[in-house]
Image (cartoon, rainbow, N blue to C red; front, side, top):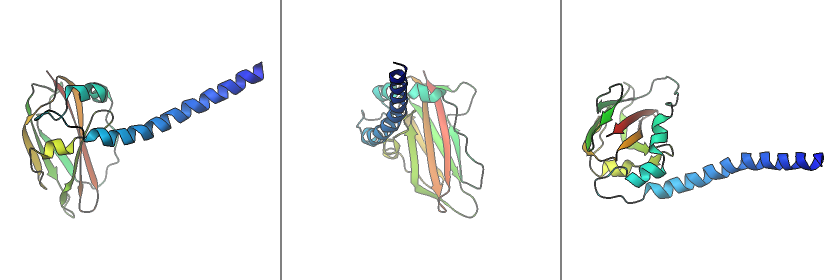
Length: 171
């Protein structure tokens, strides 16, 4: 009986380890399919996506640590940084890109990912604004009430990546 319990435990452990790998592969495929989902005109993130893609869960995660090096920078001008960043929708988002002296920003590499699953919502922003080597400004970002995390990325001509998170709580 003890032998059978040990075998059952081993099978349970193996299955527990395999499921996240399979799930992650499925999420990757699912992520690409869902990134192209249509939303009501003017919305960057729909209320359903905020719930389904765990916008509030992502808001509460600590930011990823990145190694410091000579990389481009992303400055968020709007909404202005305050301790408990609460905004009313629609709100303005203004971003400034800062390149290093040896390589300019490549605006074609700009990406915006939403929530814990990092769903690509870049096309939803670029349909309203032109992203340049200097950044962009969006006057009416429509996001439902709740806590949200937008992760922005851009690369320079030397393929160095800048990444910055915008965490907002929409009232």
